[in-house]
Image (tube, rainbow, N blue to C red; front, side):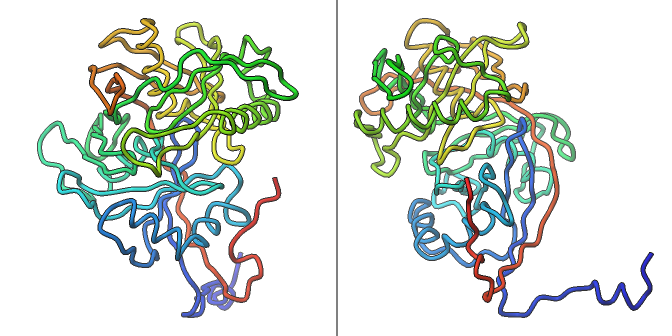
Amino acid sequence: MTSKGQENKMNFHPPDNWLKIKTIDMHTGGEPLRIIVDGLPKLEGNTLLQKRRFFKDHFDHIRTGIILEPRGHNDMYGAILTEASSLEADFGVFFIHNQGYSSMCGHAIIALTKFVIEMGLIPTPGQNPELRIETPAGIVIAKPHGDIGKIKKSSFLNVPSFLYLKERQIHVGGIGDVNFDIAFGGAFYTICNGNSMGLKLLPSEYHKLVEYGMAIKHAVSDNFQIEHPVEKELGFLYGTIFTGKPENQANHSRNVCIFADGEIDRSATGTGVSARAALHYAKSEMNINESYTIESISGTTMDVKIIEETRFGNYDAIIPEVSGSAFYTGENVFYFDPDDPLIKGFNLR
């Protein structure tokens, strides 16, 4: 118990010159999402990529400050909401992680759909509302499922997804010859069969999965050129996906994604399952209107369904629909003391 005087002392008010960032925290399939809801300085730019570039050039310390220690951790993930630069979109968003910025994020879209609808941030008339969300990779169309006040599940039509490189092989030091494909589902991924490499796609193999995933990512990046058909800034290899047999035989397979600077996705990875759907379709292993349920390393699932064929640049592509569930985990007000030598955050791993 505390006395009234002690309670007053606990009512802390930081000085006016301290930066204060408020966030709402969520997770989709176990993968965290930290959404900045207040305190962000104005972002300049006419397009979403220009705003992201402005944030990177002027406020990257906010990214590192809320993602890395001591306020976050190596595997934290975040979203920055902005006004849409396209008249076709309801709002814009770009994504942050331990290494920098990503082009699209499915688990974030699933969580943001719940957040935006339940908080009433966007007018959503009608019985079947849709959100048009502008991302660096393009506009995605998201749908909430459930009551407006309690969204149980979210789905979204992703950007065109396609097979980029088929059935290649590379020698990776410490691992050996690795067979892989590269596919795009909002980001580029190297996709390998983890079971055939002797990997168990389980939490007990966490460190080995990160070690193998990063070694393969660096080897492929160093030896294969990655070019996005439309936007030069999106032409980079984002991560490695290991596929394998599911633990629950009712599911199609297991998916473990290692991305950015050694982050391991706790969810099945929305852009990753989109890339996999494009890969399976190109190899005649999946059909239009067919749906797969894919597990994550934590045992949670996402559903991916191929909606239609399309073309994207010079590539045959598909439009995948990804579904999953998100949950709130808390809210924070983070302080940035200008005298703190670790104000920008740090990463020991």
